[in-house]
Length: 230
Image (cartoon, rainbow, N blue to C red; front, top):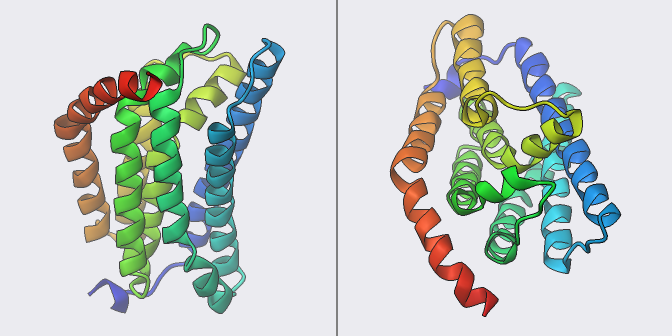
């Protein structure tokens, strides 16, 4: 079983790099977006501020959890991990209101185009966190599922980060999701000469949601949005 396979020091480098990348893109991306909204005479709704604050806590928590493991603070890592499930549930609940009540912005068209599928993505994030928490005593499963939750919830931040850089993505689906999953597969193969079950199960969950259920959630969002805005 995976719990009997010793972790490698390379895990520290791989997961640290990923944690830093997602923390930076989230803070820079949403910081830039918020500045643009205010400078264009707009206001940031309270629901978006609450959702954004929870998201900031989530990315910071993931980063801190990686740091605690690197510095062998396992007990602190375990204690802080107990708040992960309540936080992700709050992100999902507040995210529903943000998705269904958000209006498109002229200077920021890309994120709004993803709003319908965001419901599916946030639900995926919840599933990954629940799996990660369930397998919290199986190191390889645990850290991979939590990383996947970060990958899946990163879309809005990365889109805005590329907006900050004024760089157009050639394919947002590939850059935001497929490349990180590919890196995880390659890391497993290079570092451990195998692909952990959590890696391919997590990717399978993503594929099912993306290509089988995303359209359903988009239609649900299109149906509910007028009701909530009426």
